[in-house]
Image 1 (cartoon, rainbow, N blue to C red):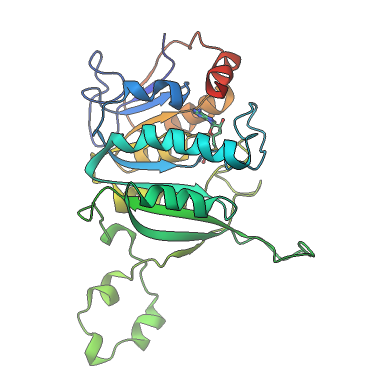
Image 2 (image 1 turned 30 degrees about the horizontal axis):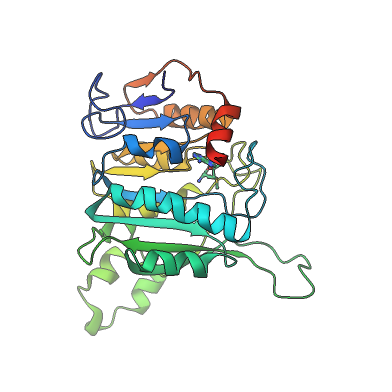
Length: 297
Ligand SMILES: C[S@@+](CC[C@H](N)C(=O)[O-])C[C@H]1O[C@@H](n2cnc3c(N)ncnc32)[C@H](O)[C@@H]1O
């Protein structure tokens, strides 16, 4: 039995019974309580517009499993392994964002540059408050996000993510020269440093996941890099932030999570978006432990 929530998305795609569970013909939002590495083969190649990957970083975080306990070459080999499984899922116009840290970004980016076209390195400034910090080096307050595309013809829609100017700034740029400029009227292109606070307990969107990403960041990726009605893959969905972004913005979604509690949180968050047609499949017979063992193999 599989464990997934099948959530017909807001743009009206039916959560069809039958058809291919993971891709192909079965539309909507699919949250799999499964290991991406052992399940990826069920996802058709060339079926995905956008991959948003926020994997274990190799820093020893406790996700209720040992998935983040690899370090050094073992971590990099594991990363290369799942990337080799994920990349063929992309359409020719598809693209991939991968969250990582400065410790491993150089190797991961070199690996990806041999397979894909690098579009950007985005720096997520987590807006960590200054409170002393480390004493033998500079305090690290950012995550590195690699943005890669299958080809130079990748999908990118700037308008939904433009940042509007406030009235004062707009007025200050109202010289004749700028009149009628789209960037002045609709807003400017976000730069490659994204300054968005990490989630604290007091943030309304915060749930019980240690590395939950702010919706604002993921929504920007989904809106810019997946066409409406397109399909997004999140191989390590955690609390389901990418799924929520897709449910809110009419994109289809397929995601994987090995921790049953996080998978349940993702289900709840997607249901709370209020999109129509939620269908919850019976619980998986696969236990977390079994999934962990499969993942470690
Ligand atoms: C960095 S977190 C993702 C956080 C997510 N972006 C969010 O906003 O909540 C990585 C997640 O991947 C899960 N995970 C680790 N190995 C996995 C695997 N092989 N397949 C599926 N999920 C996995 C972990 O349990 C963890 O919840």
